[in-house]
Image 1 (cartoon, rainbow, N blue to C red):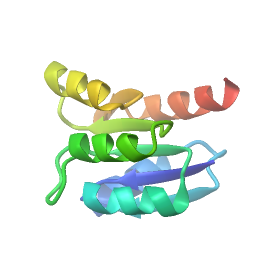
Image 2: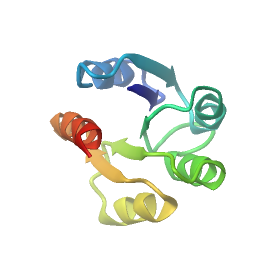
Image 3: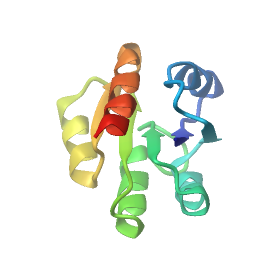
Image 4: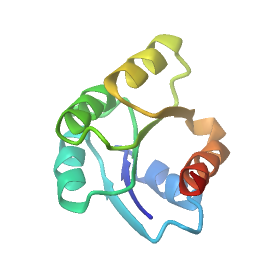
Length: 117
């Protein structure tokens, strides 16, 4: 399984890598939603782990853009913001799931669950 990690903080990207299941055999990373669209198109990962608050293009806009071009893309918003409205926006934009950065153990369950389905 290939995963694209999108977060403007390099330490958070490393933390996310450390929480991926062993079935992940490829990781692509970038620091902004704008770059995520291009990387998604060139690598076609099975999952995207998308931050919300980034400098050039935020995660909601990036999700809309990726889903607009690749409607079958699987994107999980991973953020520190525990906000019901943000979660609603992410899901409406096309995200499959929403995980808080202090609950990263949930990522393995989401990714492994996808393999089992």
